Image 1 (cartoon, one colour):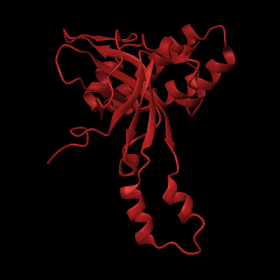
Image 2 (image 1 turned 180 degrees about the vertical axis):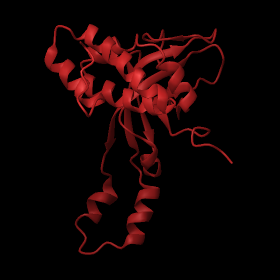
Image 3 (image 1 turned 30 degrees about the vertical axis):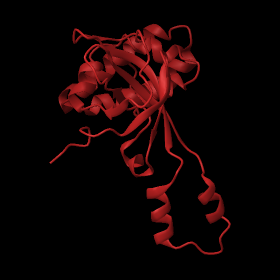
Amino acid sequence: MANEWDDPIGYVLRSSTSGFSAGAGLTQIDSLAFGMIVKTQPSTDTREVLYGLLYDIHIDDDPLVRQLVLAEAVTEETIRDQRVHRIAPVEMSVLATGYRDVDGQIRQALPPRPPISLAPVYLCTDAESREFTDYFDYFRLVLSASQVPGEQLLAANLVRAALTRPESEQYDFLVSAGREAARLLSGDMARLDNLLRLIYPNRVRITE
């Protein structure tokens, strides 16, 4: 039986070295979540695998939706059919946070080149997520990105990353991540406080 990460969740629409947008069918919406790590898989081994954090999911209308919202009655069958055959994709935006070089090493830096159009986009497995988040160099990329809510995105990613680890390791992982965030945000206590509250619902103080 295939795992959910065996098949692409979407394909690249547009890209740059700082990130990319991808299109997916509405049936994939339950697989997508703010802060998750996704990757693009090149078709040859001469290009890098690019990793990024999903920070926006955008659902545009299409001509049929505009007509249906004005209809007096819309059947469940019509709604299901429109969701399966809609002509406008669900669009997801991804912030580039690293790449796996052709030598197999993960580097938490902007990639040397963006993914090409229609490159497949995959969910990362728990093992891949753990491997990527073993190091915190990507924090600076997330917190300095102007197009994303940095502390919200990083917090969502860290909570998801913690859950890929054994329960006995989750607290220590979040403490280590919080300390690194405190170092980077020492000059902006409002952002730091927001981030720490998001990853520590019980308001555990980790900077003392």
